Image 1 (cartoon, rainbow, N blue to C red):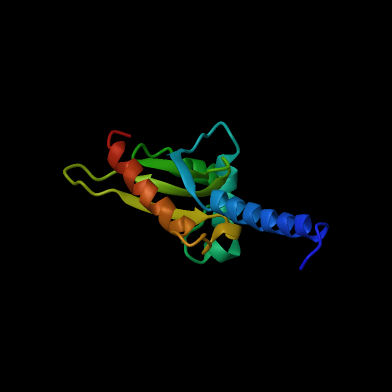
Image 2 (cartoon, rainbow, N blue to C red):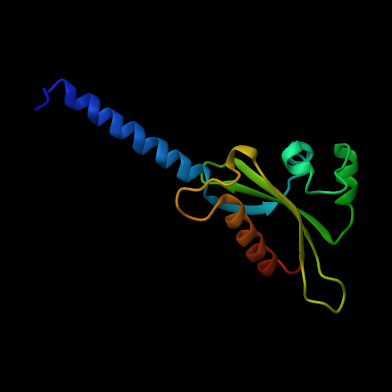
Length: 145
């Protein structure tokens, strides 16, 4: 049997464990998908993720600087997309390319997830899978981007 003094400590440990799981759930759950706000530092953040050695192997070519990445988004059919989690933090970026005239396909390009959230989930979908699903929904709902 434990003393009364030990029980609160055990309760504190349970609360700490619960809070950690809840924080991971909030970090790894996509809450919103929207267009990149070019008036903020989102574009430089996206570039940093693209240039990360873990990600850069998957993209060829990787823009050299923010200006080069910004030039890509001057194409009217290309849209920058940002995903945010339940905490309001950015979890990833992607490009959404409109379909060609007479076609109904849309292309998702350059999808990257924050390194500390890659391949992590709380028993549900991984962040990347959630983000991809949300981008598809966003693209369908916003066909007139």
